[in-house]
Amino acid sequence: MKNKFYKLLFLFAVSLFAVSCSNDDDNHDDHDHDHDTSEEHTFVRVLLSDEKTTELTLFDPHEDKISSFTAKFAKASLYTTESGRYAGIVHRDNNFVETFDSGLELHGDHIDVDDVPKFGILATSALKPTHFKSKIGEILTFNDGDGTLSVGKEADVNKAGSTFKTINAGLLAHHGAMATFTNGTYAITVKDNSVTGTLPEKVKIIDNTGKTLFDAKLQTKGIHGNASDGVYAVFGSSSGILVVESNGNQKLIDHPSDFGTAWFGSILETASAGKFIGYTAAKGAFLIDVVANTVKPIIQNTTIMQCKTSYDRKKLAVLLHSGEFKLYDISSLQAVKETKATSETATDATLKPQMAVTDRFAYITSPTTGELLQVNLSTLAIKKTKVSSTPYMITVLGYENSETHSH
Image (tube, rainbow, N blue to C red; front, side, top):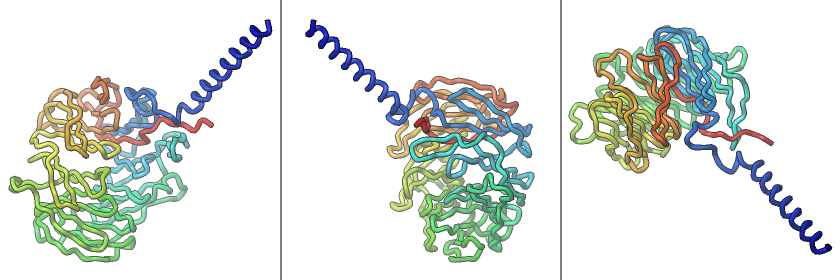
């Protein structure tokens, strides 16, 4: 009897230990591994504007939930700030910039729902705000109407009385751009009218008061498109790829020999320091290494409709006019996914699909049906969600993270 009793006692103790370990695993589950990769991360959001109405749509893909808001104007351009929490909403034709708060806050390894999604207090009027950037906690627009910069702070988005400050560097009005360096200075385009039209020809370095720190060293025949990793500011130019550093150093990297008159009018930042994507509809997308002075093809194609880096900037997504979607690994330059995502779009269509990509999904607007297409990058299955009458622009907000603070 005693032996049976001790055996039962032993088995009971073992079962208790097993349950204890099981519970312990549950408690640490949200920090040990992520959720099902066939689902979107819990804290990713997709923000969309509409071409014809002031409707702003916030989509929560994990919960399959739509929330609607009213922007100041229709046809807004949307951009995500550096932190991922906020969006800049740019109304170029209406001379206005507003902000939007996803309410999500990154705390180390997890996300807190800090507030409900809402418009920020931070906003400004400006003359044709066009080019948007966000670095070192700042939100910037280059204002084509008068050549000024508008600068706000992410920390002030919900602060009463907050506004953008204007930096006037004494520039002529032009279709310009700027880039932020990690030391707080800016590379900014300069128009000297050596070339006809609205494109600038040079780049100089200014401080946050507009004072010139380093004059332009190189002249080009026209500049459009730029990106910065905080160390290098890279500008697309018809004279070559213009690389600018905060100490005033400037150089031009040659385009590939078969480019002829083609040049990169779009430059995209990647996750790798000193490496950028150059894109031109005339040739395709290429990897630019500003340290090695090399330009390598990723995709050579003249029918590209959308060319975007993923949210983590480790992949390059391309959508062709045929509706074919291709995903490339930027480090290897190899295609990793390919599928037919949409129907064909005419090259002269007035409104074309727009795209944003996370590490799990590609989100593509369908302006003709008012839908958002969700392409699962794991299974390549496509789901459609009605968003607004004529979806216009799209951006991803939030975090590729599903961890909550549960203890």
